[in-house]
Length: 273
Length: 248
Image (cartoon, rainbow over the protein chains, first blue to last red):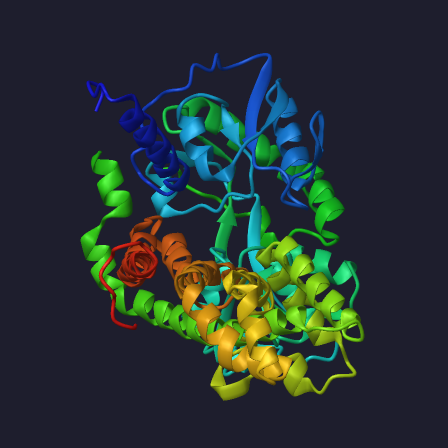
């Protein structure tokens, strides 16, 4: 490909290749590439796909959210200062591997596939799915999804969950979470299955919605570091433990989720492979 | 290069998901044919309203022109989102109209039909108009002088010639409409694009989308060739010295 002398062909290929890279966030060929991070002292650069409230939100230079505040606390604990870079989630692991930033805090679920290319810290959030219905809606359990028209956001755990566990009459994957919520308000879907914080935001937004049930899933969120940064990983895990012990963790958690973290979350650990 | 092949042309993945993608494409076909047919009719009605004679009917002409201008000027994607997002709230309508499930198709399908018909009706009205205006004025005058009403002259003299002239451009619009049905995926209709994206989010591989694109080509390429052929035939009819081409 490098030796091709046709500029147009090259340009076309470049566009194509860019599309491949942009689409390939789940690919496993992003490994290798150590960061040129100095390690220790100074700033800790952190990548995040902003906004994704309430995990990350705000304007450049003034980011906030659960991930952001927790990461700031961790950085402080290890004697550094977190500096956030807004980036696209599609390419976040590749950019991490290439050293654009030293860690990722972006509501990232720990999965075996991702584990092949990056390392995760201990879990700092256990994801739950909400059944979001109109006030007084009848569907309040997974069993009652049977035969219902269910709205989800495409590509989310919620969609996967309904495909595997719920015997939905019709599954409607919307491109964005709020699309599913407005379909619920319009009455074209009976129930929406979506991450609890997103559902809570929707309920607060008004329109006569309520969360009829919370469903624990196996999903755990972890912060992410490149695979060859064991020292940083260890430091972050120790810092997270300390924050959980001294109550800072619970304070931040309650600030963003309006309830105390569960014992399961406080004791959750993850062995990076 | 390998990455491009595996990302877009993974044959085994295409094979595994062939039935799903085909089921999605079947919805695309149904949506295209139904909306295309309705838009053809609606466009003809609009074009006729636009051509009505006489001072008394000026408001009708104005309304038809306004409609055509407005709906040619608004992106189809917005119409899709606006219809699906507002029709269900018009509580003075019966529920079977607000959230239609006619003939076993889900409501996003019908919102799609409405949006495509509304928009492409306006496009097609302009195509019909071009055809009507391409028929020499003398034809209408001759027909009227023979004692035909405007309506009779339109139906028996002008339209048969006009529609024939614009058959190819209408078919072009239909091809465009068919491709635009993918926009209805934003309201979660399980057509071919949505199915392909769904498979992508499961596998992080775009081959199912490629397969959907190929299915489109299987239909649109022969149609495009057919349009070309029609155009060249139509032209040869009016080329001096060309052999008389038999009627289509």
